[in-house]
Image (cartoon, rainbow, N blue to C red; front, top):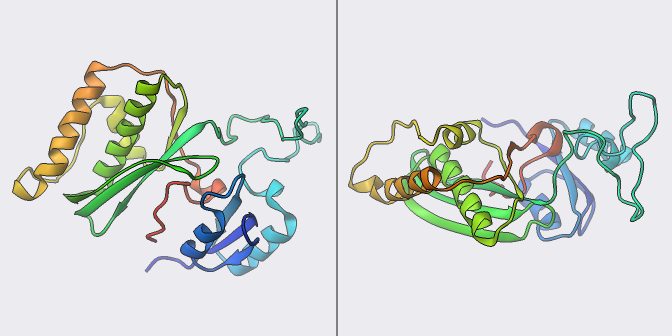
Amino acid sequence: MAKKKYYVVWVGRKPGIYSSWSDCQAQTNHFDQAKFKSFESLELAEKAYREGWQHHWGKGNAQKTAKGQSNRKTSSGKLSALTSNEIDFNSISVDVGTRGNPGPVEYQGVDTETGEVIFSYGPISKGTNNLGEFLAIVHALAYLNQIGSNKTVYTDSRNAMKWIREKAVSTTLKRDESTAEIWDLIDRALDWLHHHSYENKILKWDTKNWGEIKADYGRK
């Protein structure tokens, strides 16, 4: 059984502490500059809420440098990034939603900063979580390639990142009539990777420090 989580919303429609991901999403989805994060206990969530988002939301935000100085601000007043672990908001975040593994699969890509859905696909009748994550990344790369963008792509799947690098998937999902749809998409995605180049960074979303990835379906 999954551990109970508590979700702190510092900036959203109604800031506060929520006990379900769906309630958190209701306050943050499509809310400009929303800031939120999950915690393992109510005590930790309450403490984080009191301390404010600058201490918890995104590594490097308002943290102290080695010399004890705070992150400097830009002319617009926004905190400038002083660490490579800062979230790159000029990006697309992707994630998959499944009902069983294997089972029906869908995926989406959203604007990391606003949560606006850029593309979505599915449900595919039968597939796995990892195959869906792989397809979501390739879809994002193909979309960005088409519009000539070098935006970063965030994913929370290390397996999918490995498959992208190797241009090959490793799965126990058999090819049969029930999986024909997803295997057709996988074959097309692999063909795209073998015939296209891209400069976009594909980065692992830091769920521990940043909370759930913005594209998450909330099926925890």
